[in-house]
Length: 200
Ligand SMILES: O=C(O)CCC(=O)C(=O)O
Ligand SMILES: [Mn+2]
Image 1 (cartoon, helix red, strand yellow):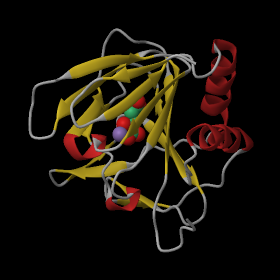
Image 2: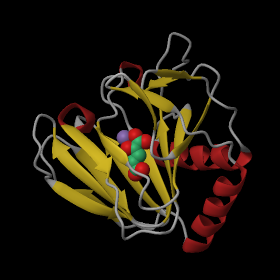
Image 3: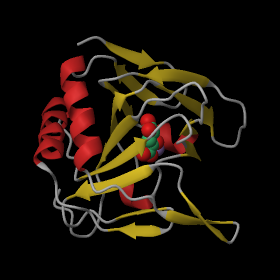
């Protein structure tokens, strides 16, 4: 499978454009949108409660509690489809993943702001495997502490972006809002949450 290395200093980024076939990606997109128990959590921003601009669902092994936006998220049990995708990733990369955060961007108005996946429970140099299904969205990267965008790439239907090494220490990423996209997108980020109960 042709893999494209994204050459950025202090980052390890690998883009696999056709990680799964378009037919499979179509089927997975439909199943996930139709069957996952989507929620739209509220976060506190400058003292006000605001809904995140997307729908989310968190799945994983029982120990994989994941805190994001200050919320402690108990994982839902793996569905057969999510479990099967996890198995393929684990076989391919020789790494464990005990949780997956699934984001549903209903159209271009849904987005995710600048952040790094650097929560302590992801460990020192986390490997995050990010599968994109549906509408192509732009993925922006900038160095921590800088406002200038250093790189953008289009995340396509059926593609996998793997972020490893020091990426989360030095870089932030986002999915910007856009008026050009009217179709839904689902993104799945497979992660390994380290807790005292994680068996290595
Ligand atoms: O939707 C994407 O491609 C990015 C998702 C992301 O950054 C995250 O879930 O932490
Ligand atoms: Mn992220």
